Length: 402
Image 1 (cartoon, rainbow, N blue to C red):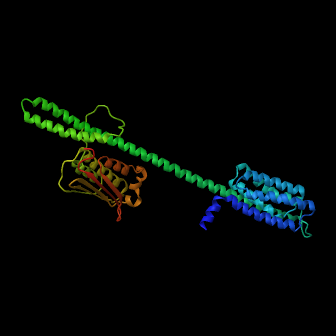
Image 2: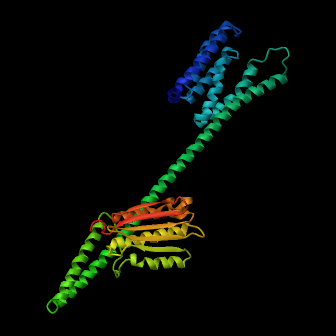
């Protein structure tokens, strides 16, 4: 049954042709019943009925042409005295509806005019023959038949308006989707540029350390070989770390590179306590725990951990609502640094974190994924079953590319 429906939906002309055949059959019965006043009118009813059948069969293929054919056929009926009611005249209702719903605007207006004039002209051409017919009964009959033609046009025009409204909604939804994709791409590009700037600063800081150590080693090379050796060792380790950070810069475009300026170390896990104290001072209760033994981390991992916690707590402050609280767990494992940030606010329930909220456009989570991916880590974020939001990140102790 579903296949039949799909076939008929994809081939509407077949459906129209079926109804055209039904209309022709009814017209044939009417002609055979000899309702025409003369043999010539009866003979003329045959091509008139065929033309009206063609109007129904091809109404969706060429509605404007079929409207003109229907009007010409109606004029031929008047001229050849093919007196109604011919069943084929129902084609006029069909083509008026079709032009109002699918035809060009001019054809819709022409169809309305033809529908309003058809009955009065027919009543003048063939006035009622009943003995009890009066001018008032004729006017009432004309009025109701005209209303039927007008209703067929109104139904078609309403369908056209409804279809245009839905098309406008679809176009608007598609435009919003494209705009959101563009905003997401812009957010990714902006976040990558920001990461590139920060990594650039980290590498520049390491290079500055290497330069200072090299100058010191050259100064004490002859008088204090042990100190020179220590300086060279520091240069070696710092250079490896800088090389790892530089590798992560590949593929990123650094926008807005500031000329000059002094390079300073970026924040890391040691500054998380200060960050959380600052958040607490802003009115958000935060529980902070550290598990495992702290160990040295690469600059990229340090910076990533700090920024993830900072972004997560910022989201809680933006979207958590009144009375929200958060917890931050920093866990040092054998090969990875685990971050777990949870809150009990309303952001997870309202979907604000995943959608970026009313002003974020999803850039927070996009930035987190980009940042964590840069150091070879993973991110898992989503609403908590009991309410609130949960962000879990795993960062390798040795950053990717080192």
